[in-house]
Image (cartoon, rainbow, N blue to C red; front, side):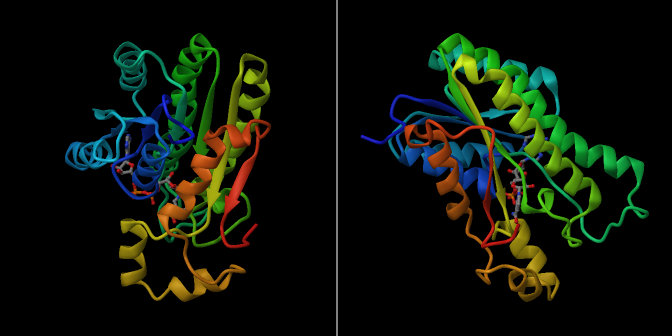
Length: 250
Ligand SMILES: NC(=O)c1ccc[n+]([C@@H]2O[C@H](COP(=O)([O-])OP(=O)(O)OC[C@H]3O[C@@H](n4cnc5c(N)ncnc54)[C@H](O)[C@@H]3O)[C@@H](O)[C@H]2O)c1
């Protein structure tokens, strides 16, 4: 029986990339998994794949930047599954080729909304459900770009992901005495479909990988393994941290 057997997990942005790999890894570890995404086709396909791994799996159409969507999703999970134990708040996106002076206000607000505000909104609604259940575990998606300045990442993305790391520590401190652990993972460059497309268009792959101790991009499954660890009882004393999964980049 998997270490997460009987646990109910919510994965935002679970239809693709790191979210999909994490949803799969959580299912393999025994959790029932709810994939929340704006991509209905991809999300439904993900839920079908996960159901084949053993536990229950469903897709919910959720825009992680819309508070009503997030609140409804958590309410539905509690009523259909009996509660919420684990959450991976994974939605986020940057843009390429922007500097502090060439970022528009519109794009700044969009990236902060998608990458940082969505993380806070998710926790706002997940935490009361977890408290009602007697505890839970949250993993937020930061990035190595939020830990040290990487000029391939946009300033809005870097600031948002640094915000995710700090918000993670804040929430961990605030809710530790209610049985909730909150950590983040900070992946370096990871071979998701979006990044594969970027590498195909731009001769940047070697430059990016060359800045790491381990000179290659991570696989989504390698990031997912850290998510499962943080969700598991093996990490019972780990809270408030942002765990790098970045081949040595700080
Ligand atoms: N791929 C990398 O190299 C890398 C590195 C560090 C951090 N990250 C972070 O990991 C997370 C996942 O990235 P990825 O590369 O796997 O991305 P991806 O594009 O493969 O997947 C993102 C998923 O989020 C969904 N999504 C987008 N907007 C949404 C919204 N408003 N509400 C709900 N779902 C939404 C998309 O439909 C998609 O399924 C992001 O937060 C990203 O910033 C990625």
